[in-house]
Image 1 (cartoon, rainbow, N blue to C red):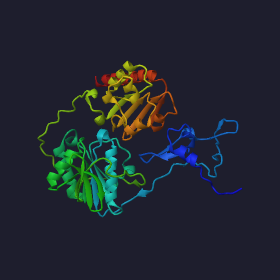
Image 2 (cartoon, helix red, strand yellow):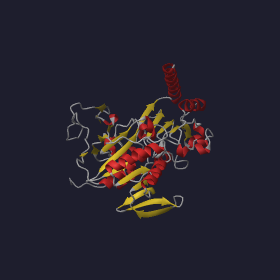
Image 3 (cartoon, rainbow, N blue to C red):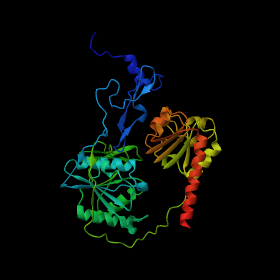
Length: 406
């Protein structure tokens, strides 16, 4: 019998066609893969093999069916360490750190900084106040400078500019990178540019050699200009760092930051009705689909969580939600930090609409639906019982917080 491997065009076509009923059977089983944060994820359902009598078996010795390799206890792949002992120059990045963590926009910015730094430069991340991030190393940070203090807390752009000026005097970075966002980076970058006397490159989405390209004309045109020292970059300006692990060595300022008398008084956050937030700008979306049978309970849960409500196309077509609440390719593309899908199976148009969401939580009865495969956290069970338990947990947490405050 010939050893030549023959192609099967029909099998290849089925593997490409997501709508074919045999599509899932044609996909290779992934036992482990690397997540967006550089952490190796394992598929616990993919361990083992189907025996001759149709029963799933797990080989504890490590030799899987037909496999020539042995599984070891240290199966996790360690990313190569990128070190810069004596940096020739610095690329300073000031991430937004919304909620104390790196957003997808921040990671894209660090990817652009790593691209500009090359092998001789180091990426210096400047963070204000306390943070909750523990993945600076896998995000591409070589040096980490935390400017902590009450003067930097809240809305204090003038004081933060003073801190960045101290960083500029000590490290003399070749480039400053800030996110051109509405969560602080856009305003802070323009204030810093005015202080340093630099002309910033705004809404930059691509850097090629000594040239940067930014959006202009209400986002309908591209404007190319020489590479500026201060860059305000848009989302998806570069690929985030995923193939290297960095040191993220802590550094400090040699001199104290001059405290300036602020002309701005921070009155704190203003409560906003989640229902009034546009879907494209919402950070926390609670979305329902065909699997939701008690819509009154759904609305009650969204109100308890303080989330913006969304829906799938089926729920909108059935009249349970307004058309402007529809999420997906035929509705609104969302970029929420947390997206909770209740009773949504995960049609391809809906998955396209939530592709830029940071964390996806799925509540569904079907453990094999596409939304469960997309989700970072899945809860299998009846949606009504899960929502009731969720409301009870939120109320218990708030009551405990009130007792602690009293």
